[in-house]
Length: 104
Image: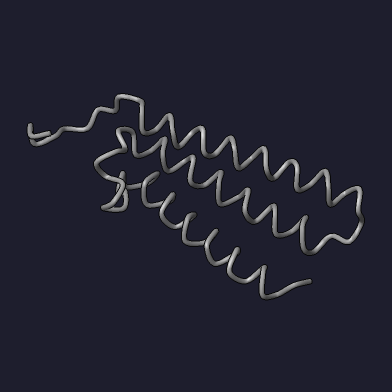
């Protein structure tokens, strides 16, 4: 296993998952994304799916040694990542019930 690849990916996945949990439970989004996100809970769900996909990629890409299982696993992780990104995009486009200050 290549630890120099796995450690940063897992760290990034944990940070994305923490941000997703904050958005899912509290409706809190990072300040740089607040302007764009209209449905924070849906956006947080997408972040959790993307974090799961990154961890899935680490497990199947770096830990599993069987070639056939590795290819199917990383392909599934890629599908999860695309699904998470689509859910995050829908969270940016969906009209949530957020009360704004009235200024654009």
